[in-house]
Image 1 (cartoon, one colour):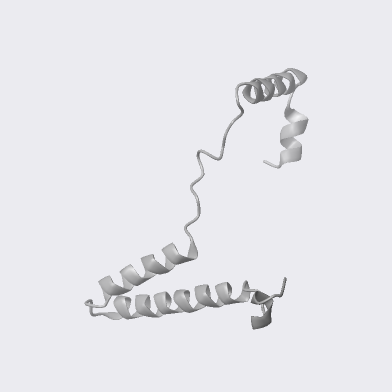
Image 2 (cartoon, rainbow, N blue to C red):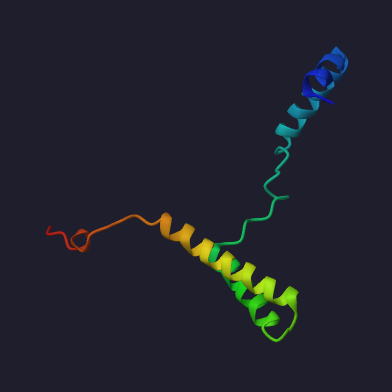
Length: 99
């Protein structure tokens, strides 16, 4: 159901109750959604997980294992490429400034 339709169908009483619940929640410390969300793994952790999977499938034979090796290899290359793109170019002289 589109959001506009929900708003049109809401009565004044429902809107008042929703606002009151939101205010009460904010006064009690809010609805901390940060607690519910997990942190995204770092690049290093993701690459370590891919390496672990690679070690596991290394001893397996079959088309699935070969496809998985290709996917893991592509994942590693893409992840490292993205990391390289975020780096800032510097000169060696940037680290040796006279004071």
